[in-house]
Image (tube, rainbow, N blue to C red; front, side, top):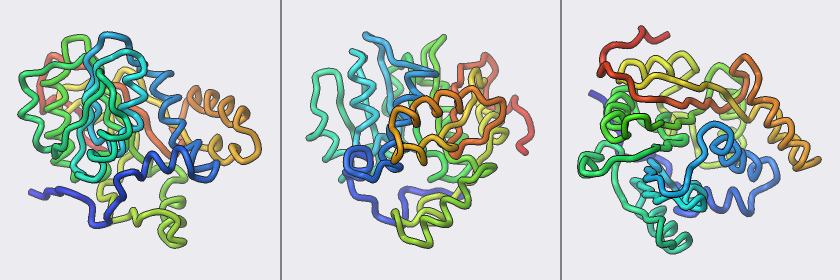
Length: 254
């Protein structure tokens, strides 16, 4: 059984923070659009218990905590956890170094919402199934799981190849990304593990490329892209709810 415990390309601990705050306009909007998607599809609420899996430098964890929710961010990177703990210190936000295969120690906790942004493409399919089963265990009845991942039935493969070729970001294909998902595969993986998709969309189709011209226009186009009937954006969004049936009751993956 295949298993990954980290990327072969070392990612700086502050990578997501720098991309959001100091990147070029396209990169900044790309990362900012994650916050827009959370607000649109599964906003946090004050008083909730929230888990952010694969938190990186802590940008999303901190954003979730601004709602007044109590948020735990976990990541395998020591550098990322060290940066996030220092940069985003708050009474309701904390960080912990933990592999995605090692959520068992959290069994004494339960969460209203779980967020997992652009992580599952970094691990093999069998690990994603195990992770989704853990999500089903950890989320409260009526709770939700928010997942994003690159859409390999969009322009994303071309974007990824271009960025890797031009070395515009840490090498992605085969070094960071080892699983190549589409909307059907994402939905089916959830169903196989007792998580039924309740909302599905995509983002980052045209909007980020408009940011150098007008940030406000990019925001408006981003909102329109979320209403498209087809998953044309480079990033998939899936919101899942716990099903009564356990793992093994889903569809056959496409």
